[in-house]
Image (cartoon, one colour):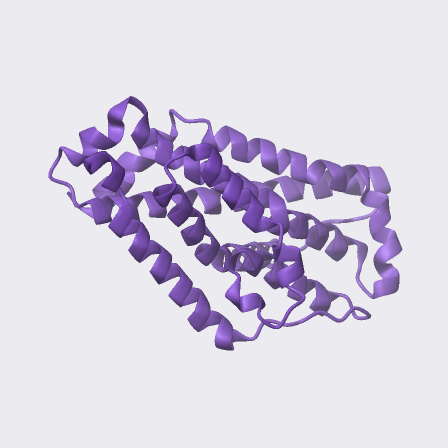
Length: 256
């Protein structure tokens, strides 16, 4: 069976889960405070950033630090549990399917879910900016190309983090432990972005990227900027290593 066929099968299973509902709820919760506190964006002009840019970046920072990683931790575990319920994994392993290929297919679906949540976030941003524009009598809308560029950077930076979360869900059979460790790994990200070795901690990548953009937009605020070396080689190694180990361990418990 081809990888594309396996991806299609795995994507079909998502419809029976609550993953998309969880992601949608997280996105709505993310932007509610931005609408309620839209007036606070005018106070940030002292930092040299416009209210509309601050509205976007603050929302994206909240997403990149906790809301997006946390929902991905839960989604990753739920994605893996679709196979463990009703002996689904045993049924899949009884077929002539390469387990490594099945593991990669599931990771591709995870990437698609991550992209979907970021698209939901972008969509909710435009809705929130529209509401805030009405309530504050000020145009908070930004160029869609700029918004999608920022969102795309967060998604690209999140790939190594997603590979790590996938490794946790594959290697740790108990869902509560997998979720607990995943959520605990998110918290230090806000500290790691202020160190010189931020590139060694994949959970800090999305937050670091958007924080660096904040520094570019705020004339009076200085933030560390992304240096492709050694970040890109480290990110590539983390992603490949996590996927390699995941493929080795995938389905091992069920084969015993």
